[in-house]
Structure formats: structure tokens, C-alpha cells
Image (cartoon, rainbow, N blue to C red):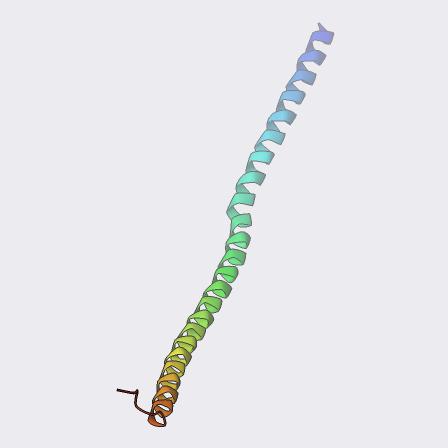
Length: 92
């Protein structure tokens, strides 16, 4: 009878220990999801802000390129008009 009690006690301790580790692991995963995501979210937010700043910079560059294209077209038209002034009319 004392051997049976020892076996029951040992089995009970093993069950309680394994249950405790399971609970601790579950709590750890919960805390990791809860607080770990905040760190990841903060990092992602910083990266997103950086990408937004780069996009704004690219939009500014796009506007500048469009302005430069318009100026180049204007300059080409002015140069073409100046060149036409010195030409002889086509033969009739």
C-alpha cells in the first residue's frame, strides 16, 4: 500500500508539473503576442513613415521633372522659331 501511495504522489507531481509548464508556455505566448507585436508595430510604423517620406520626395521630383519637360519644350519651340526666321522661303 505505501508503494501505491508513492506512485500516485509521483504521478500527481508529474501531472501538476506538466500542466504548470503548459500554462506558463501559454501565458508566455500570450504576452509575446501582446507586447511583442507592439515592438514590431512600432518598427513597422517607423518604416511606413520612412516610405511615406520617400514617396513625398519622389512626388516633388516628379513635379520638378514635369516642369523641366515643359521648359525644354518651350525652349525647343523658341529655338525652332529663331531658326525659321533666317531660312529662305521654299522655291515655288
